[in-house]
Image (cartoon, rainbow, N blue to C red; front, side):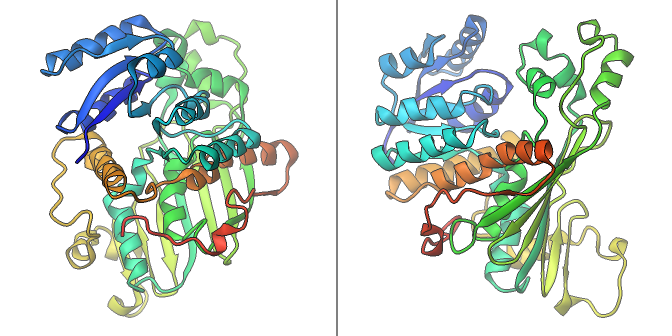
Length: 396
């Protein structure tokens, strides 16, 4: 394996998980770290040094970080807004860009990202670890084996009580609060849509055609702030709907339902369902229901929790003999880097490529437009028609 000099740009909470997934790799050298806050730079540099590695250079300007430390790759875990900007700055200098997730702010910025890649051919990828969840890869494997039949409908959700993190954002120097004050959209769609897009061969023989979003009232955050004495938010009006529901229509006839639910009390759930003519997989009930294995009418609680039977039979090859231990997000942070470095080693396309990245990130812009206008919004085709010919080689 080639050695890679890496810069980590953005040193909030997410950077810790990414560093944990990188630090065990002998072929990785963290040469620099960067954040707009100097104390975060110092803390990360000390942590890396305490782990027995040489102390990285520290920067508060991402351009100087890239230009002066000469990394082979940047891992971008900043707030959402500058992801595309940093990716393009790196790509123009021949530096591989691996960006954390988040939605986009304009369709034009995504076309700029596409044009930058097509001009430079510098690898760029999104670090969407949800694509490597064990159950998502089981669904992909079973679909490829024909066990789910023809795909008809999928669902995904980001159902996560984020009230404390959002409402204390100014205190914690966290970016989400400003987003919820000023925007109304599905602001975090890629955890939901990434695995579904891979399952439905989006941009590879299929594509998203249109989207419509509706949002609930916005009262959850105001109530939480008042109940918990967060005085700086007294009287604050939030644009963000407490629950956003999005429906997508695909070229090949499938439908996709997405839900963003972060402003109300609830348990964490991803809501993944993959449903075809021969059966379905449901993440929240940890079950597989196949025609071939079930006779007659059954209730959900009769099949709930049977997932291990199907892992035993149809485990995806990436999870066979994989023991994630205590690494981030149940091991999927490490698994996604394994796949990324494998692709670089063999000169393959990125597992999650620039066309995936643009398509998934565009949902935030389209959702915002749909809720503002009350209608369906067409998806851009970032492949310029090449979706007809492209092949889905993800996790093969």
